[in-house]
Length: 377
Image (cartoon, rainbow, N blue to C red; front, side, top):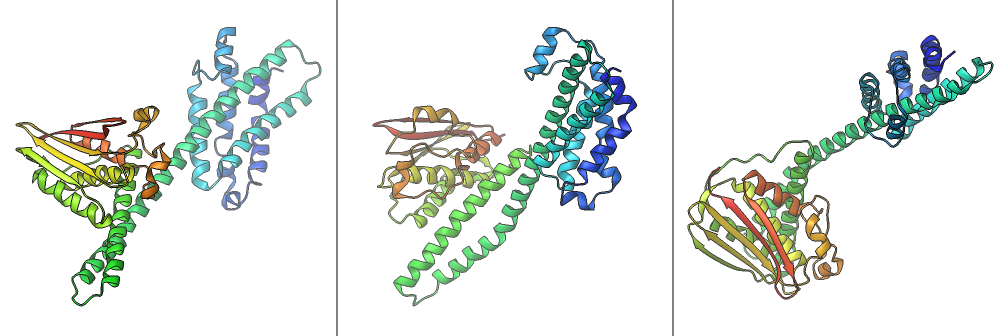
């Protein structure tokens, strides 16, 4: 009997074996009923049998063996993808889920070989086609599982970041109140200032994390444009940076009309990250230069710092998420507290406003980030 026909005829017996094995995958299996344990096993097997009966050339067989998406079986992919999602939902780990396919493959081959009297050339071809189908199903299940796992992680990070904002705001407000009290000795004031600067750093990291997760979930950064003066935003960002870096000595120059319509919160996020990046990776003197130029339709912001240039091989990925500077020795004077999300968030804010950002970095000239933002949408 050909293997595809054997699978159709023995499908219930094979699925019984699947269920028996799945019930041993603890602890998730402890709370699952028969329907949940069997899940999409029957659909996967029947779709695999149909796939085995379709015509396939030698070239198509080679292409499929190399992982090319050629002559894939939609019903097999759908069943396998749903299986991966549901196994993640009920609590199977990835190793447990993939082990189900290993056991399924072994069970089918064992049952079929036991039924054969004399294997022929067609039997070996059947095994090749069956393995192809199971490999395709395994790949689809794994992909669906990984996507669901990634989304769950992102949602968790979003909730965590959201819930952290309230206590951080409380820490910042309390430090503000303490700093305004009279009669505080210099030592205590220094501690309060450190608490304030640390809470600002943490708030920046939480904001970056939320922006990153939002982009991972497929949602662009929302912007609410309101009339604002970019000069004021730059000054506030520089003042905030100076709180955490008392030895910071930034210069700020501006020319032209710098009023426009932007999202102030997002612009603050952009400025904090650009200035913070310059402080982190610039020379030990913390000397940075911020310049702002306005014309009729745009403003151009530049943030410049001296020091070790960005490595040439890193320029292309500097705005990617979770990328840290390749020059680890640069930040010795100011150990990094970033998540590797700062410049990614900057790029997202710029894109949300319909602007552009570029970077130049070389020995002698230092590093300069240039942001061009339209004044209106």
